[in-house]
Length: 310
Image (cartoon, rainbow, N blue to C red; front, side, top):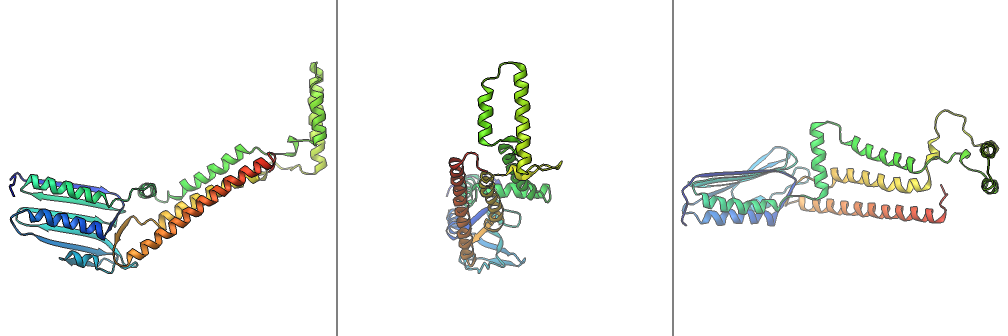
């Protein structure tokens, strides 16, 4: 192979959640072995594994890596592959201790060969990224937790309170003074059409408020308290809105912690465990979607049945 003797050092670091499984692992190793095979000098390939309990395992055969137990209670937390000969040095690290850090570094005397290998490996590394909206939320949550300890729950509680307060404003309190029996309301409505003078208007408003007060006292429902009756703000429609949103917030928080591991080395026992996590989160999201649809449909049904119900 013709070479460019210009020395070069390339390095790239990614802070991202990742999932590396056996096919992706084999593809990365295959590219390394293929490109190093183009050089005239032999090369050494080695692997370093660190488990959750801190144990370090050094291996030289890629098949031994994917044959590790990778137990659920003591999974792989760090993985590195190193290839080197007299011309070059390559190292790839997958660090699962800090919410996902991937680093790739190549130093070589052959700049053309290095750039080609670097580009091919970057492409394969990017295929291991976990970039769904939930992982973007987890990344933001972890960042907030680092900068502002105990700041994870307040935004969720704040969102829930916003929903509650929004419901309050969308459903103004229906106090007894706001209404009258249907017959008396119709009477006042007809009477309003014949109002002409200013005195008529004043008398009309006086009689209306007097009738409302009498109705409130007669129904024995006036609250003699300086504190507002928050129950008057709530309606059946309110709960059909609040409950689904509360379920979404709770479910999102739970699954983001329990069912979305940021760094996954998918071989050994962890394959079955990860499949179980995927099964749980799919069913939870399905339950959220169904409950939300039921809430919306129920709300529409109540509105259609009786606009004044609640």
